[in-house]
Image (cartoon, rainbow, N blue to C red; front, side):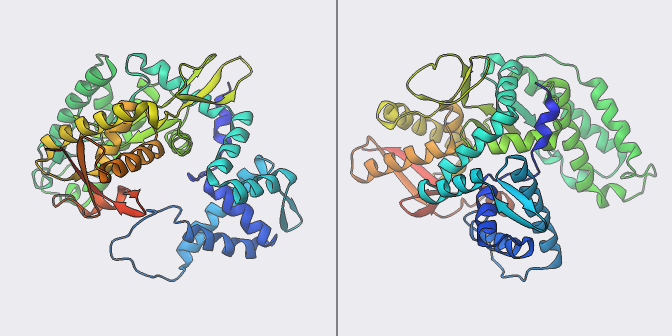
Length: 420
């Protein structure tokens, strides 16, 4: 495969953008009219932000900056829709092709999941990017079923406060501690022993040349540029892992685009919570093989080389016991460290999804069924779900974690105990 194909996709994450573009151009082929209809649908679907909540929401006018960002996304979706032959341009207007009309009808009559699957088929037929992504994960870390780790440790995570980092030597101390921690993570999670001395020295030189720190002892440049310096450090190591350790022939921005689209399709998971580790993890929840492993797998695509892509979509009836047991054990694993009766439901979701290799959609469906059995007193455990956030949770962390919709209500925290 020529990996340059993988950069043919445009820079937006949500597959639903294809749907709202087709609806916008169906409403009007005129670009300007369709654009504002697109904005309206984008806001209604809460694409590009938390789908469920905002703290202290503020009604704001459509500023010129927001229009600029929306217009950029709109034009990006147009370009990829043209690439997929969903739309065509005639003079200054855009029209749905026969294929575009077919997919719009699928969205209207069969729902967004079926629509997204059709988009997946078009993308894979042209690019085979999901094949590359999944196969590369498994090749990189066969012993851990394709797990990729991207360590992110702030100074605070390494027992250094912001007030303790005031000069260049403090930055060096942090970088050396970070190097040691990352080497430990590589050995633990990837089963490799890698010396990062050369990479760490390269990072030090880059920071010195960045202009973000001043060589003078009494300079306040580190304090003023603290967040920028940490971002440089974080981006360096994430890119290092992607290129040097995992050998991906893909930039970080395109890697993330493919990963998050794959997550929407239920074939890749990515989380920012993993026990004993701080950062982001990526791992496949699908298989590429000629024959499916079990009835828990559903064939999504057949490739020219005879391989098939199978998504892991377990059935509740056969997996009820395993799910409830994993849910209970994972709750107590997290509870033991959080020292709180209620824990973050998103954390529990991430842990259960990782252990069972299931999608977030499957987790939500299974939790709904388990909770209903709980209400009917048909489970050995008692499940309590609440909308509150846990007391020690930081506001920004709360904002970026999505709640789970159970019984038509959004839930953020959970407690589980054995029935007496």
